[in-house]
Image (cartoon, rainbow, N blue to C red; front, top):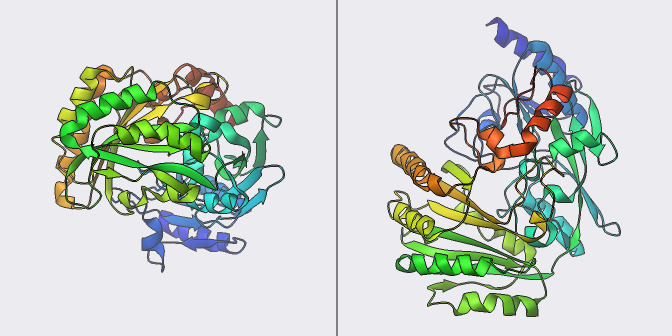
Length: 458
């Protein structure tokens, strides 16, 4: 009871200067605020601090330090693994921080840490500009960027983190700092891939690029019986894509909820409509698709194209790894595993990385995965709690059967909470040692540990 009273008293004290809103269990709005996107995550923070600005975040950090409470940081989006919330600690909630400022002449945008990609894209597209963002518009800019940022523009413009100009960061001491290539460049290197290990990122500045007003995008689906031919064709197609063209492959279910299994390709071409028509024609002419939505769309429509497939509150369990190659055996294993998928919302996804994202040196940013190839994702998602055990078991079994084809690297944004071994080391590869040194320098007590944690050396 003493700890509870101290938290309550501190909340009152904090409320005297706090610009946002403080929520405790029992307060109106607490139950909704504690929920995250993944319905499988059910935690009850002792305090939820819905911050309005960077000074609010700094005040909460100092409060948590004084009380010896753990903190979790919630941005604007998903965090499937559930690290955006915490049991009995303090949730620093950036979701109310939605300010976006665009400098069209300089092609720059500054956005606060609670912004989603849908919100950012809507504002930047008013000026015909964009930056690589998530493939689902409800994804938050903060988590995606800090861990990498695979997206529809990565072939032409690199990952989300490759377009960072600066970050506003609140340190473990509650200090508000700015980091860029010219200001604390070692810290800037670390946050570009190092996730939330070095502070709370309250502001992002990105370089923008001319995109649109129309891009070419959509989905082409075939019957599951053709999955082997489709995935082999997908492999051949990704061998020679221009930078402007990004192509993902998937084994998924029909979007109508019928449970019908499909083999599909999802694509975006951000070049001219004429170039896009030529590049996507082979995709459209292959086989006899049962669904073809590929055509000119707005960039915002593209980013919302898959949103309905990822509803808030659905149960999610993901497993992911980079592949050494997409061999025939790997394709056959994927097909056999997907045939056993117990949930009509489950899918297997291949994210192909090429172009500008692969022309950055391994040691130029903390994110080390710069080889051309595929990231493989087992995405198990369901609505009925009665199917939880089966849905999780299928994801684990599928991942295990695909392990013979796995590369050493892992994408940190997809790591779960029950990974064996040292997946964080695998996620950072040769950069892990330097990251641990910088963690020791900037957060030696590991205050920021509710994340894909990089342990300090001391």
